[in-house]
Amino acid sequence: MSEIAALLLCKVGGKGGSADDIKAVLEAAGAEINEDKISALTADMDGKDINDLLAAGMEKLKDVPMGGGGGGGGGGGGGAAEAAEEEKEEEEEEMEMGGGGDLFGGDGGGDGGDY
Image (cartoon, helix red, strand yellow):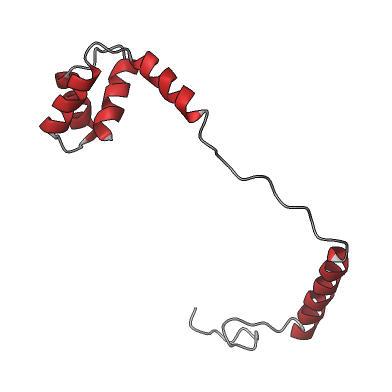
């Protein structure tokens, strides 16, 4: 995949996409050079226009089903009642704490502590 990405970067940069161009991009990125993959790619691309290949690929992708069929219908009412009940429970929990949530175990008297 990195070889193809390097080829596309060469094409975007106005280079021909030769094996040397691809190697230069891969070396600059610090990627591993695989001579076999580079030579196979350049042989496959010989005499072909990258724009035509991309357009043909996009045409094939048009027939591939993507995404879901949309979300299902929402459930009936009642959701609002549940949300209101949850809020009420949360408020009760907060009230029970009473504000004495000292995380450091002290009484808040400022007796010096470890800090």
